[in-house]
Image 1 (cartoon, rainbow, N blue to C red):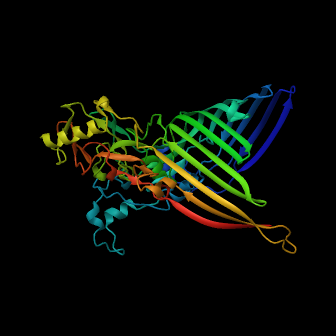
Image 2 (cartoon, helix red, strand yellow):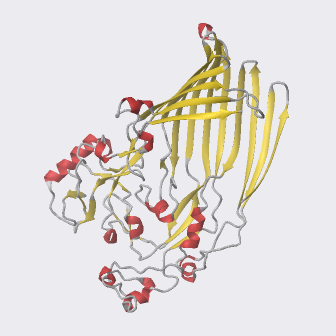
Image 3 (cartoon, rainbow, N blue to C red):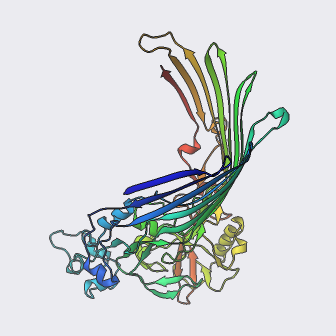
Length: 518
C-alpha cells in the first residue's frame, strides 16, 4: 500500500480556523491467485483478482471556533479507511480450487464429477493411497475445489465520519476553577464495508419461518465483496480538571459514552469460511444490518490521580482508573447439524457453524413440533414445556412467531478498578550520568477481583457470540420444524454454566517493578 497526504490550516480570524486535507491510498502488487477456468466458466469472471490498481481518495475538513476565552466549538467531516486485514486477500491465493481439491462424501450427485455419485464417507475407511476409489478420483481434478476469490468490483473499505463537539471551562466555586466540560457526537456512515457471498448455491425452497432453503453443492465459490450498509453513533460527555492544593496536586477525569451501532458482517475472523459462516443470520447470502458485535451501549469511565513530594524532591504518586460498561452482545441460534443434511442447505463447511438465528415459535405453533427424533411427526409435550420455560426465562416472549435479530441480547455488564502507587527515590549523583532516580511502582489491575472472586469478571457467550438454543433442527414429512436436543441448563434462559469466563480480563493482576532514570 502507498499513501500520500496533504493538509493545511487557515486562520480566518483570531477565533475561527479551518483545517482541510486529502489522503490518497493506492495498492500495487503483481502476484495473482492461480486462475481457475471452472470458476470463470461458472461465474463469468476470473478468480485471480488482487488489490493492484485499487485506491481510495479521502478528503478531510475541520472547523474550530472559539466562542470566547472559555468556550470552543469544533467539528469535522472526512472519509477514513484502513484496519482491514490483508489476510482476506491471501485467502484467494490459498483456496483457488486448483491447488487444493477435496471430493464430496455426502452421497450427493456432484455436478463437477461428470454425474458421478460420490461414494460417501465409507470410501475413506481403510483407504489405500496407491489404490484410490475411482469415484473419488473422478472428483479429484484441478479446478473442482473450494474457491475464495475477490470480486472484480471490490472497493477498499471506507467510512464517512462526522463529528461535532463543544468545550467550556467552568468555575465551580468551592470545587475550583478551570473545570473542562465537553460534549461530542461522532456519526459514522459506511461507504464500502466488506462482505462475503457464495455463488454456487441456489434457493430451492423456503423453511416454515420463511428463511430460504438452498441446495447443497459439494464445494463452494465465495467472493469478497462490498456492502454499503452500517453505521455507528457515539455521544459522549466528559469533565476534567487539574488542581494544585496544599495537600498535593490532583488530576481528575470522568466520561460517559453512549453507542448505537449496526453492521452487516462484523468480519472478526481471518478466514473466509469463518467470516461467511460464523456471524448469526437467517440467510448468509443476504445478510441484513443488525446490532454490531462491537457495540458497547453504555460506558462510564474515569480516573483520579494525586501526587506530592513527601520525601525531599521525590514524588509520591497514587492513581486509580475505573470502568463500568454494558455487557457483550450475543445471538440466540439453532444448530444446523447434521452437516450433510442441514435443513437450510448450503455447504457443510458453513453449516457446522451453528449460526442460524432462532425462530421463536408461537404457543402451539402449527409449524413447529418438539422431539428428540429427527423428522418425527409426534410432539413431545415435556420437551415443548422445557423450551417454553427457556423462552420465558430469556425474556423472549415478545418475539413469538418471529426470527430473532442478531445480537438481540447482552450478557451482564462488567466493572473494573485499577490502582497504581509509585515512589521516586533520589540516588547519588553518578559520574557521567548526572542526577538519577529510582522509581518503584506497585500495580493492581482489577482490584475488585482481588477483594471478591465474583467482582470484576468478564462473562460472555463463546466466540462468535452465538448461544445455541435449539440443539438440533430437522424437517418432517409435514414440512414442520422438529426442535430437539436441548442440553442441560437451557431451561430458564442463559445460565452461568453456559458463559465463557473472559480469561485474563476476569482475573486480578499484581505487578511490582522499578524504573531507573538518569
